[in-house]
Image (tube, rainbow, N blue to C red):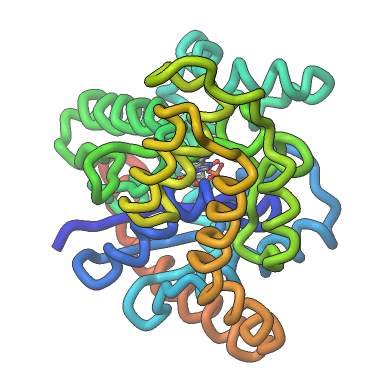
Length: 331
Ligand code: TYM
């Protein structure tokens, strides 16, 4: 059975981008593959969270994984920092990762722009830690959104380099995966780029948002004054709303509003109302479970412990073999 690994950083509530880019695929894959889904708390240290924030955010992602439908008895759910073998592999892979290629990574350049006062070495080697997450279970499929494609390419590079250096076909090549065969990028509501946790107030719809909060955010989404000619190309802020509709609404709804747009009879207020209701329906089953699960500390503790045990079993086997390949031997 093929092995699947993926993770989400513990940097806040999960949003529709996380759901459609990653989580939805986790849930579909769990019955078909040997799955490891983790909470990337080590990765979140690059922005220096306080201990209380770190803990709260880890718990929130764990709760939302479970509320979204990951079954901890089928898939292995764990917290990255519970598996120290990951950081050991990270160190070995760092010896083979070159400054130039790390500095050229798009995510590093974006972070340098976003947090110029905190360009730490953890940011630079972020893709190496990510490769360690994947290679530690020798995974081949990684369900992620489009923004992670370059990181997957780097993971293959680091794995292959290790194999070549030690002349040993040890790590398989991991590939980004999405059931639709196309990696997705869910747009935000600000009319600009992707939906993200840190892209500004109102840009993201969270799985835990109340129906009222969803309606408010969607009604405030950026639009223009409407099409002025039939079949006109949609500007990006309008296209974004249609793209969101594509993921949460029925195909008939999408065609209906597309026709209205093309015939210049669209009223954006109607489109937004429909979009908000469809988002509310799409997230309702998850939202309903979040509070109940969050209150069950004993269950969360059990899930995290069981996941850590299973993940360490797999990870320690890899580390034993990697140590041997590298040449660490007991005297
Ligand atoms: P993170 O925490 O930024 O995002 C988690 C997952 O959600 C996807 N995603 C999106 N997909 C589509 N549209 C969006 N707007 C959108 N926003 C986020 C991301 O592609 C990702 O799949 N580096 C990773 C975490 C990580 C990881 C790993 C993933 C660490 N180690 C190993 C896979 C394997 C990250 O920052 O994701």
